[in-house]
Amino acid sequence: MTESNRISRRQALTIAAGAAGASIAGATMVIGTSATAQAAKVSQKIVKYQDTPKGDQRCDNCELFEAPSSCKNVDGIIAPQGWCMVYRKKQA
Image 1 (cartoon, rainbow, N blue to C red):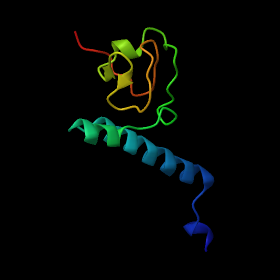
Image 2: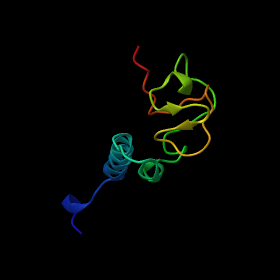
Image 3: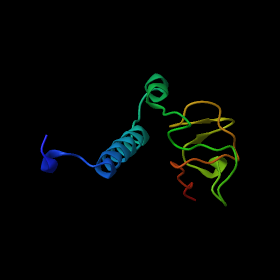
């Protein structure tokens, strides 16, 4: 492999981050039955879920939160006072 054909570590990490971001973005756009929605959910680790708020951003103030303890896009039990990177503030 010639020097010009090599991918740098930085380029590889950028590509991987872009692919992860695209899969998260795609998961947030899935609309369908509850079985389809369940299949489209991503893990808490991928969206950097935490069970504490990030400032005034809390799951119970997010469009994706489903009371009492779930999310349209994130798998597992979700705390109302939690937060993750797919947070979208509810519109008034």
